[in-house]
Length: 102
Image 1 (cartoon, rainbow, N blue to C red):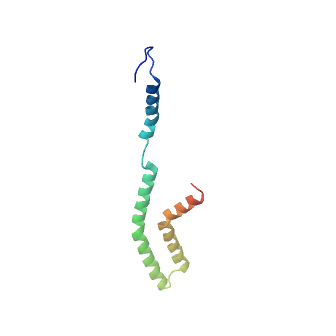
Image 2: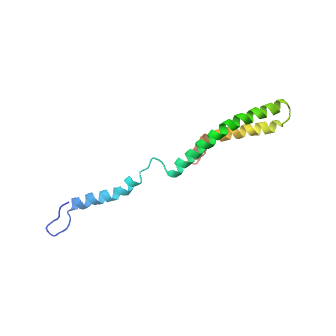
Image 3: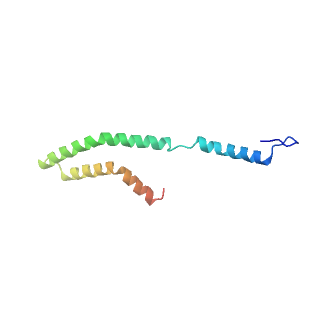
């Protein structure tokens, strides 16, 4: 940046300084993902890690009780539907977001 004889900055210097200062917040806030999405993804991964063995054991117990005729088939179908919704949640969320263009 150069000064003119009257002590003012030249136009090119002012434009360059303005552009640099304007772009600084963009560079400072440039993140790959928001902290909320990072936490939500981590929570989802942890829940699915816990849910996997629980779901396997639940299906085994429900199958054994259904074979022995000790449980209503409605409970079995409800448990299987709940497991399908739990493991299919990311796809369901993507589908709903696509419906509402979010």
